[in-house]
Structure formats: C-alpha cells, structure tokens
Image 1: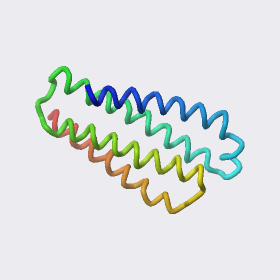
Image 2: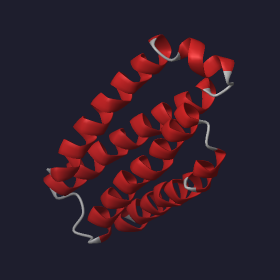
Image 3: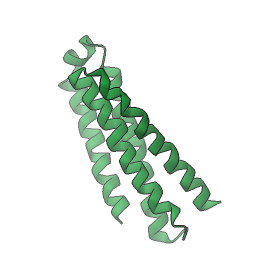
Amino acid sequence: MEFVTLAAIFGFLAVALGAFGAHALRDKLSAANTLGVYEKGVAYQMYHALALFGTGILLHVGATHSNLVPIAGWLFAAGIVLFSGSLYLLSLSGKRALGAITPLGGLCFLAGWVLILFAVV
C-alpha cells in the first residue's frame, strides 16, 4: 500500500501545485516564459502519481509476483521528485542549470515503465 499512499500524496500535490501555478504564478511565470515548464512538471507528476497508484494496485491484488513492480514504483517516485521537482525549481528560480537534473527523472520514468512491462509479460 505504500505506492497507493505515495500516489495519493503526489496526486494531491499535483492538483495543489497546478492550482497554485494557475492562480498565484501566472503573471510571474508567463512573463519569464516559464509557465509552460511549470505546467509540464505538474502534468508529469499527475501521470506518474497515477502510475504509482496502478503499481500499488498490482501489488495489492497480487496481479504479479515479480520483484520488478516495487522497483518500478520507486523509480516512478524518484522520477516525480527529479523530473517535476527540477522543473518547478527551474521555473521558479530561473536557474537553467537545474535543467540538467530533469533528464534523470525522465530516465526513471522510462525505466519504471519498462519494468512494469517486463513484470506483466
């Protein structure tokens, strides 16, 4: 159930951060052309909160006994922190160097999906 718990936390935060960006940051970020970057972080956070939820469900119902599923769940969680987190920090701080972290999160997402694939085929 830890992945369902993480999914709920990350899903809640995605909605809250999306609303915060739409209302409190619109003028600040659109002026710096970074609102789209921020919104991309929110979108990928929500997609992978749902992936965490699905991972938790797979484990809970015993749909697979593969040890790859928990690893995939942790990769999704790490991807959220690295990918979305770096985009949030990049858009709010303007420090372009933070963009170097983003691909690491993307690789975590990709690896998580590949592990889910191998676990269920």
